[in-house]
Image (tube, rainbow, N blue to C red; front, side, top):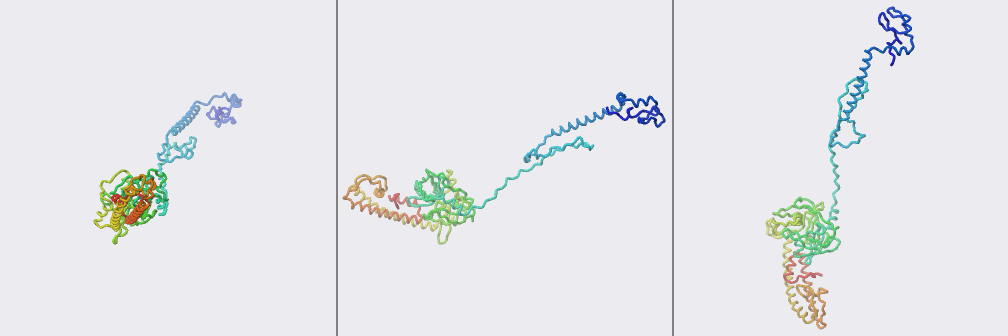
Amino acid sequence: MVEQPSSPAFSWKCPSCGRRVPSRVSTCRCGHALDAEEAAALTSPPDAIASAPEPDERERTRTATVVIVAFASIAGVAYWMNGRRAIPVRPAAVAPAVSQAARPAAVETVDPNAPSAAPPRSPIVLVPAAVPPMPAPTPMAGPAASLEDVIGAALPAVVRVETTLGSGSGFFVKPDTILTNVHVVGGNVSVTIRRQDGVTQPARVDTTAPELDIAILRLSNPDPNQPTLRLGSGTQARPGQEVMALGSPLGLQNTVTRGIVSAVRQVGALTLVQTDAAINPGNSGGPLLGRNGEVIGITTMSMRSAVAQGLSFAVAIDHAEALLAGQRPTEVRGTPLSTLNQAMGTRSASESDVRRAQGTQIYQQTIEALARQADQLDGRWITFKRSCYEGRVIGSFDREWFALWEPRAMPGAVSPSCGAIFNDVRRVAENIRSAVTAAEEAARQADVYPGTRRDILRTNRLDYVGWGK
């Protein structure tokens, strides 16, 4: 125990007035002087001091009260701190993630040993403010592809469609699927396609829709790397929109013409895209492309006359999409040409129609005349075969003497004594062949439909795949 200033080791109590007098002073202010016994008590050794009586009861009570209050304060602060730590801090649902090192303190702590006597403040919970999510950055639009790039990417998908009676254009929409016009394929069940690099391949006529002038061709052995064209929409085309027509006009493959959409004609259930891009015989069946390289139509006809120039039309590609999906039109009647003439309210034919009609008439007259010559040759052939030819004729032909141009069709021998007769038969056959070939070329130049030409040949028994070879 620490000695107190009021203990006998430091002071003595005056018996007269009760004051405490320092031990170094022997006389109180009231005049009372220490006697010898009291002076001896002040000079006693430390053990005597240790045995001196304890402070009075009031001082002990005050000391205990201070200690209890101190412990209670410490316990209260500890309880408050634990309660503060138990308060959960709920971050905003969209608040960005913050690392533990960078996270702000969730509560404001109070130092219990701080000298300020101000009562502790109410706890403050710091909740991060809700931050709206940042929008995804919008990619910068790249420069539009040049016209040369658009055409360069499209040309490998455009092909020339060849038949025994003529040619037109077509384009790949799938590695095994080609779109073209019905009047290009005519009545053929198969055609030949010629790619940009000159490679040819047979294709099967899978579907025809004469009312739309759209035909679908299929390939049995498609090239998986074959470039194709994307299909857009002709019904959404806008007047003034730039377009390009690709195809093989007049047999000139990989030809491109450029123009604009003049109008979109809705005639009943049929949609035609009118354009001023040059469309010539042979362009039929080719694609009409928009500036982004998507197909908006299949070129099908052109009307030119002394009073009308630059009127070309394409069937909206939307009809082809429906046909590819197996949906045949039920509202469309006639053909695109007849539908257009009806919409124009006129029965007058276009320049191309007039040329085609005249060409058809000339072709039919020519073939009928050649058929009469072929009938006469039939009689000579029968005589030649009975008297001069030993063997049989292999193959099926409209007229059996067509076998003269097939290397393996006549494996038998010709009698040596019949050389003159055989040469005469061959001469007449070659004359007919040359005349039919010339008539075919003239009709093609007049844009006579291949199907029309083939029907005329079949009617006159002159349908032969070898014409022009």
